Image 1: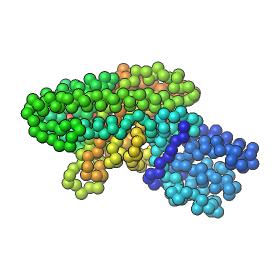
Image 2: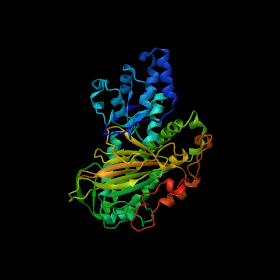
Image 3: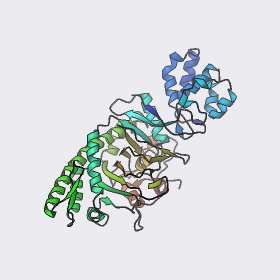
Image 4: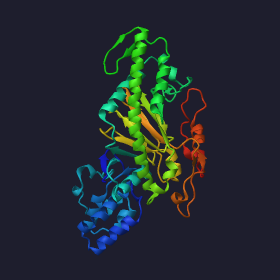
Length: 448
């Protein structure tokens, strides 16, 4: 399975090795044995290709490396020097041989996230690419995920109708209700609201929210599911129509959740495989009781503002093992690099975004990264997304296995109960969603 790389934002800084030195040594040995014949070392070059990144952006440096070979530059220069210094020392390099989009010195082969076809088997090259993404960014994309455009359209259409209901109706499923599935504006953000649907019985969870909304006694105007108009009805008729719509929506949510639940299991298995040979089998029991929940998100920017962009949802990390995100074409999702820079994760048709959560970061002893991310609103239109959080069970004691920690290394996180961490992240201040700026490192990190 090959990973595709997407061009995106500008980056700079130096080149550092982040994978095993074996990649470099294997390439050097192959070139020496074959007297520099690159054609006989294609597999080694490919492994070398995915084993580097520049600054805070993943890059493809194969072209630079080949130019160095042509100019008899020692491989150590590429390992130890910054990109700028490489070109400074080897001024004879013909930069015109680089692809046009890679020819800028500050930001060579500027890339966003790798894209993986999730139905294809992962080979050593794609596993290396996935490992790179999980360790450096904690984000990647998948295709062939099984969610049809029609299913996503139906979910978005229904969700917009729910979020368009009057506040006094929606609050019936809010924080002070019995179901507590609706998060209103001004809890997480003035511009953000969401609806939670929990597993494993997603249909029943959606129905409980439906009943809470139906208990409102003054609903008189509703929108038919597949229509683009609304009209007043008697309360009895309105109640019956909304009841049918919500029942239909529950089925849609169940279908969506069934697909992403399967995806989560497949993705988690291959992610764990990146940690070591047969680890996905060895530690299968660790994840056998995982569960998931959906959060349907609606962002509504203010109508009157002079600001070009507004924070729709502030910087945070996910309290999950992995998160699977569907987003519309509005954009605004950003991930924070290790150097503190923000990078856009622009919408790409037919792809889902996957990111590592805090629970996986702790279980992997920090090998995988749970990155801070946020949502910016740059357009005066509503933004829609659906996040699926795949988590350990509440009473799970999270402790990095000794095989993952490695001989001679120490655990970076003290063992902790999953539910205790969730409680730690909850904010006791009225009107607040969760503690801002706190992660699993603050809760269980041994170095804090």
